[in-house]
Image (cartoon, rainbow, N blue to C red; front, side, top):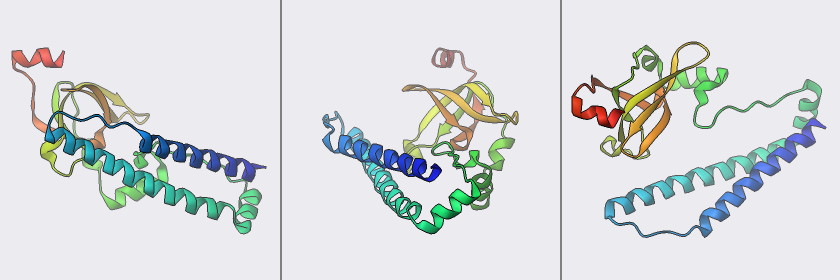
Length: 184
């Protein structure tokens, strides 16, 4: 019964992925005003396409594995339950947190004292950090462990919320009077 439920959930996810891919194929493209905007838009779409193709391959591979009889027997005999972690945040899962820590150690970011009005560079989709956005911290959000896990920043495009692993602090604070209008 659980295996059928898992297969149905997998089919639903695969269906959603296919629908999203079809929507993207049928999406109207509005011409942009500058070459830089066009380049940025193309890079975004290229990254989305790469992500979708990778996800499709993974889902197809996973669907084949789930349908294997040995795995079905094992899952049903062990009472396996599936728990999913937040997308793009593998450090939120215990096993994945240790795995990511082995690959790159984000612990230095937990030692940073994140404060309101701090200026940060926000990790973007471009390789060049020159094209990443700047932000000013408006709110810090703690996790269950009382460590700051994410921040709300004011950027030129509005308020956004990002995990601290995607923030790079500058060693300066907005203190000049004419910047307060931007912060508030």
